[in-house]
Length: 281
Image (cartoon, rainbow, N blue to C red; front, side):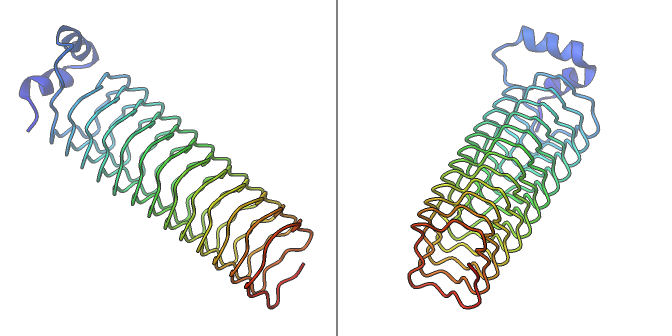
């Protein structure tokens, strides 16, 4: 249960809240389970607050400070958190469907198993964050920074990751069917066992990536850089590699039936044990 005094000052308005926080700098706001729907909390300092299980549906928190907040199990559906600071926030099992987090700062945040379907994370900073098993179906992650982000077993079906930075990110066993990754930076990314079937990935930078056992039927990799990447054992039937740079790429034991390698650069690429029936070079 939320502390009645803390809740009182929060609802009195921005001036009263900021004054109370300055008077009690060592006090961690206790707002557990609080009903805060539709409130205007823009630019509020909620850093370090305990908002576990709170209902913040349709809250306006843009440019707010939620650094280090405990938001486990909180509901933030349709919330406005644009340019909000959520560094090191705990968001396990949080519900953020349809939430807008444009240019939000989520560095090192932990959000295991929550529901972020359809949320907007365009240009957000998620470096070092953990989003394992999170539902990000249909999310907008265009130009987001996901360097070293953990997305193992995450659901990214239909998500738009165009222009995003996923260098060194871990997407092992993630679901990315029909996702859009146009011009995405994927240096040394881990896609082992992931499903990219039907995804649109032209002009991506996939250098030195781990794609062992990847399921990528009918994926468009045209004009991408795939040098030194490891596709061993991947299912790449009907995939398009037109104009792709595949110098030293490992395609051993892959299913490449019907794949299109026209105009691709395949010097030093390895195809030992691969099924190539109907593929074109």
